[in-house]
Each structure stands twice: as structure tokens, then as C-alpha cells.
Amino acid sequence: MAVVTRFAPSPTGYLHLGHVHAAFVAWDAARRGGGRFLVRLEDIDPLRCRAEFAAAALQDLAWLGLHWDGDVRQQSEHFSEYRRVLLDLAGRGLAYPCFCSRAAIAREVAAAGAAPHGADGGILYPGTCRGVAPGEWAARIARGDAHAWRLDMAAALDAAGRPAMRFREHGAWVAADPAPFGDVVLGRRDVPASYHLCVTHDDAVQDVSLVTRAEDLLPATHLHVLLQRLMGWPTPDYAHHPMLFGAGGERLSKRDGSVSVRELRARGMAVADVLRMARL
Ligand code: GLU
Image 1 (cartoon, rainbow, N blue to C red):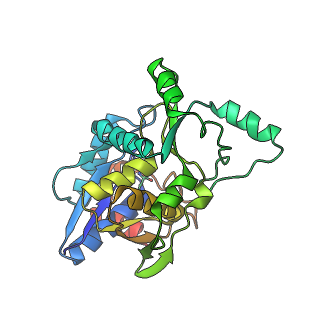
Image 2 (cartoon, rainbow, N blue to C red):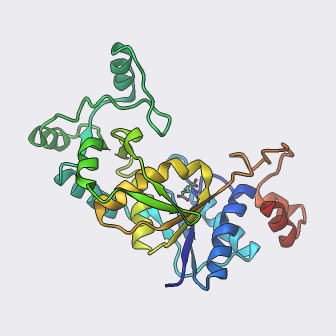
């Protein structure tokens, strides 16, 4: 089967060289393998994402010659699908609504005298809402109480069962160890979805067979493999690439103030030069 890759930016700003690098890696893998290169806009966060940045990202990719196949998928148009997954997991006792505010969680953890951290860097959730009976949480949701949705990690690991979970990273098998994430948030309080949920759902429905992305997301892959197992989705191959650029697009080795693709273009830089800068 021909490879299917994707570039999945969050339109929170203009594309910078780090994005160009990520897009190029995915595009190149698809073109070399005679496969398909997809573009997906990960825009579930209404406060941080803007339509103007989404449109600009597509214009920049086209300008760079990194043409994509098929329609661009926009996550904000698919909340009902993500919601279905949450309710499916909850119905199987693998996810539960959490009514705790961030401050309440911090207070509870502080009172317990320790603040263990989860694999995603946040405080490990102490499980306060895990034991709430479904009848009770359904009533609280019905009366409009704000809530997130959390994975019940212990139940999920039980349900995942055997054989052991693993994924291929650059062709080598890696054992997946999602436990350090604890009862991670799958649906946020503000939007009924999360990065982890959407990315695994969409990679599955879009038949992505090779996920290329920056290595800061390698730890998350351990959790993604668990979600794939729970939902019966295939686990794609992964190939995380080094981060060459900081969050603002600056070179990590030398802060040369690299800027957005738009600005490089406005300065008269040729496509070939932008691609060369981003491939180093
Ligand atoms: N939307 C994510 C980002 O912009 C990338 C997600 C992924 O490639 O899995 O960092």
C-alpha cells in the first residue's frame, strides 16, 4: 500500500521554518513512496486559532510547492465525531467526566503533600472524579456543570490487554508505555476534544500510514498507541524528526531571528532558498 503522510499545523500564527521543515519531511516521504501527502488544520482551540492563519498556511504551502492531495481536513468541523469517541469510551468505562477546576486539582495535590507530574508535564491528576457514578455525572452534565473528559488509565490499560502495545519508530519497534500520562484529558473543559483524541482519530479516518512530526511529540506517541488499541484503529508507522527551530521559528543553534515564510517571501527570498534553510 502506498504511504500516506500528513502535515498538521495548528493555525495559531504564520508558518515559520520549523513548519516548513515538518511539511517538507512529510511531503518528501509521500512523494518518494509514490503515496499521498495530506494537510490537516488542527484548529480545535478557538482562542488561539484564527481562520486568517489557516488560509495563510495553505497559501504558503502552495507557494513553497508543497502541494497536498485531496481536501484539507479542518478539525473544528468535526467536533461531533470527537464527541462520539468520548461517549464511546465513557460508555465502556474507559473515560469519565471530570468536574475539577485546575485550581481545585492543584489544591488537592498540594494537600496530599506531593505533586507528581504526568508524562505531558502537567500535574498528575489525583483521580478525584474517577469514582463518581455514571448516574451522578450524567445528572451534573445535564444541569450544565463544566467538565473535561479524562481517560481512566488503569481501566484503559486493562482493556488494552495483550499483546503488548508497541509502535515502529524509524522502522525499529518501541514498546509503548502510556501509564505515565495518568488520567489524561481527552476532552477539554472549553472544547469537547483534545490534541491526543483528535490526532489519533484523524490519522485513522484519513488512513495515515506514516506520521512524521517533530520529536517533542515522541512521548505523546505512547499514549496515542493506547488510544488506537482501545478504538480499534491501526497504529501507523512513526518517524519523529529533530527540532531544528524553536517555537517562534528561530534556529535553535543560532538565534538568527528567522521569521515567517510570509516575511521571507516579502523580503524577496526564492522558494528554493526557503526550502534550503528549512532542510538544514
Ligand atoms: N498540530 C500539532 C502541532 O502543530 C502537530 C500534531 C502532529 O503532527 O501530530 O504541533
